[in-house]
Length: 106
Length: 492
Image (cartoon, rainbow over all chains, first blue to last red; front, side, top):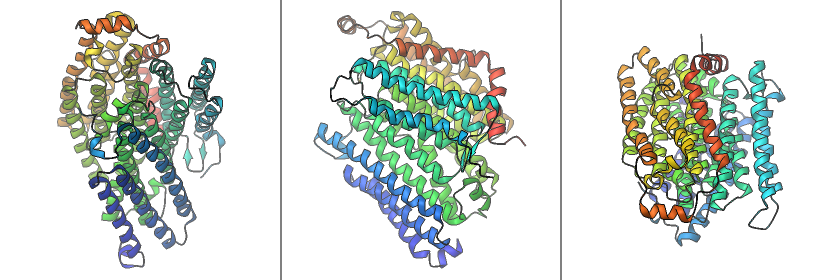
């Protein structure tokens, strides 16, 4: 913890946490599906920034660097499914406003 | 220490290879795939799952616990794999009938299902955070698409979108937790990381909490449950059953692997226990009370699935090896009774969106055997004694009392009593209430579609529920207890 907050890592971790919070806020506050979707991507990439910073700090840990590549691939898969869903919804409803998608309620 | 035993890989490769073959088997541009091609697709899926099941059963019989790098096919992973394979086989059987009733038989559905199975097996068979994350994503990304399978239905893509957004946020949180834990401890192995974590470092606690959020989202525990009813209602009946059983089971078993490590580290052990107690109580209360007021049977089952996550979490509050055994046994019975309950919709021929209690009226007498299975599965869900569900709850509550959480056990019993009301309401609709005239006319115009396979799967589920109740004295020590003691090495 002390090494993290006083050393050279400080900036990277701060930026990563900030990106993460911004992404979460975007998902929770914006009401456009595409915007919320971008928020999710921001959260994933915040983790990437932190991961690479940590990996470098630990002397270029190969496992963590590979993990970073995996995360990019996974994010692409999620994006593919997510965009397909947005398009399917847009075809049926003609809107990507999250508040209009409220047919399912108890 | 790290083995390179390919025996650990086979059970996971079977569904993965099957999933890759299925798209090849359906290369055609026609909307109506020929019946024999459809049969081949479903056949490949069943063979892949049966192969995985057979291989795991063999491993279990020999007692081998092979390892491939960080992938550990130990007893717990074998138990999980068998559990997931059975759930998936029942799902495939029900899917055949359901998608024929809907007129939407597509090969990609089954392919996605098998990929999800692969992810679940991976998720439960490792304590390496990288593999866990990949497993988590491999199980959830196909599920997002599966919810929206029948894409001409408006509800389908809406429910899928909600599931996708919340699920993606939960995965991101899981990932951030992983990265924080890695950064502070320098290892991606969860048990090593827990051992190295010294003191109550706030950043480490945040990481552990984010990680836990990922698990709890998949078990649909309150307050991460909002997606559950929408996603279940939107998805086809068999997929809803699969999600409620296999996803929850995989997450609970993976949590079981992560949790003892968390408990044994003095830093976060007591905090985790408190968090689990609070979440379990909230899940039980909110799940049960909301299920009471539902008018839609499928939505009721979704809230009931939430409340069952509460009972399972109560087992984690007790935390003893006996409680973990109880949780595993409960999961196995829960598999049968929930697959049975969701399978009923298909077996009784309910097509489309109308799954209200009213649509079920009088169907119990039309198909008496299915009615009997419904009674068995639903009474077991409520925890009525001769059936398996009762014993699952009994083992968990017994351990709660033994570890001094008497009030939680009392709450659990009260929650089961409340749940009896909404399960009985389902049965009342099936047997007691007469269908309205309009409904009679509608049924006369469109006679019930054949559903032999779905019926068989419901019958098998009911059989497992009864067997689990009668033979629990044999099943618990020889399966669940061995998975906990030999897989987790918990019994000291």
